[in-house]
Image (cartoon, rainbow, N blue to C red; front, side, top):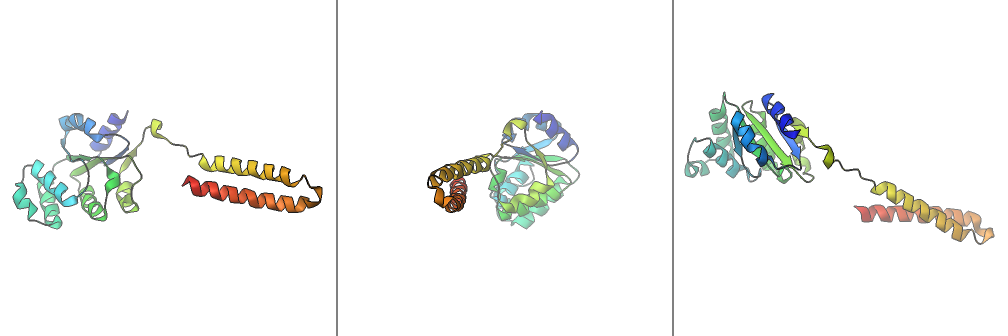
Length: 196
């Protein structure tokens, strides 16, 4: 079960990335075992860092709003030293370059564990974070892409139908074969273009 896997990873100090799950539903159980915070999404990073520091009870928001991201990171590092804090958020796919830098810093801290979820493809800039996290994906979410196989079959059917039509005139068999292969390739390229 997903929840047991999340608990095992958090217990081992590993950050977790879950596919198509709302991590907020795991919040009560995780909060019973560790200090847990939920921020809905990872962006904008400055306001999320302020929210996290505020929820940890360090300073009020007005003082924190005047600080830059680097200062907020230092504050967060100092107040979390020696603790185990789980930060949870959804919409990992909304990561920007600035958010990747901020969350990457948090991911590298020993005291902070991230539990995040995503439901769509995310940008390539978020891939370094993705590599550092454990991935949990239920089998019900597995997707098999068969569109290129279907396109190949349709192109082959087009090839054979065109060959049949071209072979009605026996003197032009070589031309018909060449034209049918060309026609099948055009069909396949058209299907792959439309299928994107």
